[in-house]
Amino acid sequence: MKILAIECTHGFASVAVSNGERVFERRLAEWQKTAESLVPLVMQAMAEAGLAVAELDGVAVSSGPGSFTALRIGLSVAKGVAFGAGLPLAPVSTLLAMAEAATEHVASRFVVSVIQSRPGEYFYSIFSVEDGAFTEIESSRCLVSGLTARLAAFADSLAMVSRSADTLASEAPSLAPYLIDASFFSAASLIGHAEKAFAEGVAGTAAGTAPDYRQTFTPAPPRG
Image 1 (cartoon, rainbow, N blue to C red):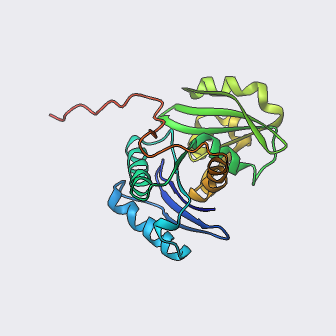
Image 2 (cartoon, rainbow, N blue to C red; image 1 turned 30 degrees about the vertical axis):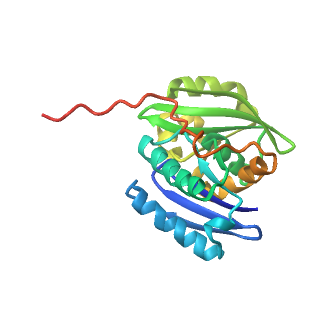
């Protein structure tokens, strides 16, 4: 399938395009969290894949949780492409896609994907993995102390994947042996999940897709 995927839920952004044979990807290690900085990545990846938007079968976007601003921008760009070309839009859970990508690097019965919510607090999802199939056991948000206690039951066959692996290891040293840095996770990690959604006809629409914030945005108080 020919798919455009966008992942920008965190501090770096990536865009991947599958032309049905190869995946072409562009990344920004640091981006300004504006649509103006993301759209050129889309154009570059599309050009490298040799595709026009009209040739795409669909658009995929990492739906969160993650940075409020980054989620809004990623989804707005994905919606713009999908709506303009009349394409289906597949929102992909960031926690699930991160866990799926981790299994290419480690083999464990349980995989936990972790995303920092705020200092000392994390979103997490626990998945059991059997024959390549992922079953979500639990998904929540808690302080690092609660996360440590919750994961003790899975310690015999556990892998944890997070973009905040170093921070999490310093806050909870007992988790360090299980942690994998999610530097490998990018827009290309969404392609397989999106292909399945489009093939099964379960993808959404631009109008009906919303970010998975999992918390309420609280603006900073005015200065002065």
